[in-house]
Image (cartoon, rainbow over all chains, first blue to last red; front, side, top):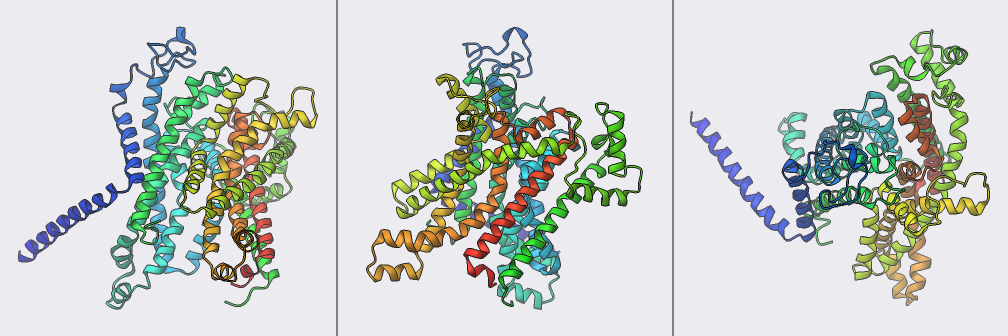
Length: 300
Length: 320
């Protein structure tokens, strides 16, 4: 009984501690102009994605054949596409797929990269050797070509695109984590945990993982940017579900239906600007987090 | 570890390259076999092919033999450059891909050279004025281009070219023309797009590499001896800063190839990238698979070459 209350007090204390350190962290983060701007961009697009039905002037799926590739007008600020769909609404809704793919694929690649990096860094030996050769291989190979072939064969659903991007993007995370683990495992407290009879898994997840976590977090934010980029490129090339509304898909349509060669800038420019902005948002945030978490990079 | 001689360094690299090529071929074999659906229908059977073509494919790839024998035949065929028959063009995949590879190289080699040179130039410029406004401006410009989707920037150039007029935006030559001038005209926009998107990474690498070198003791010594600062930069610092660039360029070749695929698609440049794009649309799996193997082979071999050059110019790499 007393042990239970002690336990809950401990939990309460540590959650209070977490809240306090989160506040402290936010105070530091707020001073980082690049980071705040990046976070602002992410929030902007998240709001756009969540409230797309409220801010879009039309239902993006509404087909109107009398409005074939019409130029911007008061009714359709960015004109319409080859199906007469309102381009402004399509661009708002496009934020959804980009963010879903970005977050989901980044989550997969970071989790896989974290687990592989932790184990291979901690245990070393032949498993580590294989991991290093595999990551070398992935660093060299043009990953997009890999993704195209797999996605084209397994079928172009949204889930498949997420899986392909996520499962082919983990090696750089694994490598970063591995090199951190190599230095952390020589720290005295890990040594004392080992001497005290700590099991490998306990040491890895209880003592080492918390120390690499900040870098993993920064890495994950950057991974969202590259996943969004990869998804846009795949859809542009015609890999992926063309009925899903996405920015890459809008650009694909602009090329496929001759809008670009007819000079219809309103069709092709906005989705590209959105892609650039959202990628910059995640890159700036990730970069600032890395700078804050990595003392060596502080003050750069 | 024991001292590595140059030849054992090269031998290790060659062994790794062979392993990589083996992985690529095996991956392809299994990819089309672990997936649902009939692999034979995906790769060797299509209503578009003639009966004779299907029969010869069945013999070449041992389709009625056990799986392990098919695997060995597959490796042999891949090494001999036989990837089956294209469903769309109805001729061997290789006969379509070899000219496409040549067209890709015509675009990719100058693009790589120009991006690297531009990256080195802007990187040196930036590192020399570290943390100044010029440094920040150079880096921001490089990053801005780097963040642009390749296909989108290509689209912007097409819009501009159409607005200005007279600049070709598609293909490698005008119909019936084979002149160099005509080729260069067609190359201008795809080349510009590739260079602008990819030079930025080289700028940043060169800047950081040179910044590290400039803080080395021997540079400080050169200053202390009263050497001219320009002379220090160009004869001591830049050559040493360029060494790590070689392996970084090699690693980034894969990225350049990805860019080339997108750019070729945008400008209908008849290279491997455009073939991949068309194969996706035509569901031409043999073509897709052949293109994938040829592209990855090329990148792996280019890396081997870069490793060898690096080993020759930087003696430190041999002693690990």
